[in-house]
Image (cartoon, helix red, strand yellow):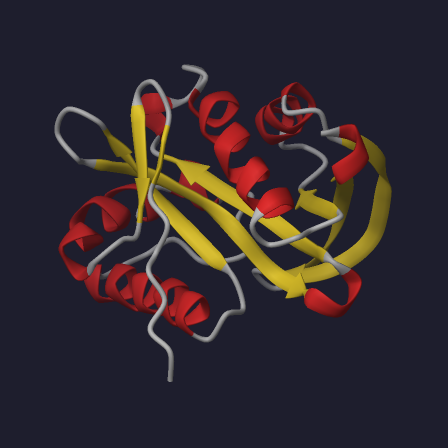
Length: 181
């Protein structure tokens, strides 16, 4: 199997890089907070082992060419403060879903506005995507605002489209097309 090199990206404040097992304590730190997982399709982490497992899952997705998830690292310290990347990659339809999360101590500081730009560019230019989608809880105003700032267009609400944490829930959907980027 051909070994692919994980593409590192940079912004003014952040280095977007592949996460490793050593990043698990930071990933656990934010995924163990209910405010982070409130709108996320996973339960609040109880053990650091869960952070190791999600990092392994994201890296496996990259190695089998089914997606890519960057760790958002502070340029100075290299500390992971969140992640962002593509999953649900439908190559035959030239589209993928973007997802992200950020440690609460970095909320409302423009992190996603900054990191989405090189990630979206990578999706359109390197992955040859024509459409990037994002799904979020309609009550998650912060995600909605971040996506709008990145140029996404709201398309509507999918009623009771997901079953998460024991209940059916609505999903708002928005997208960005290559021609709009």
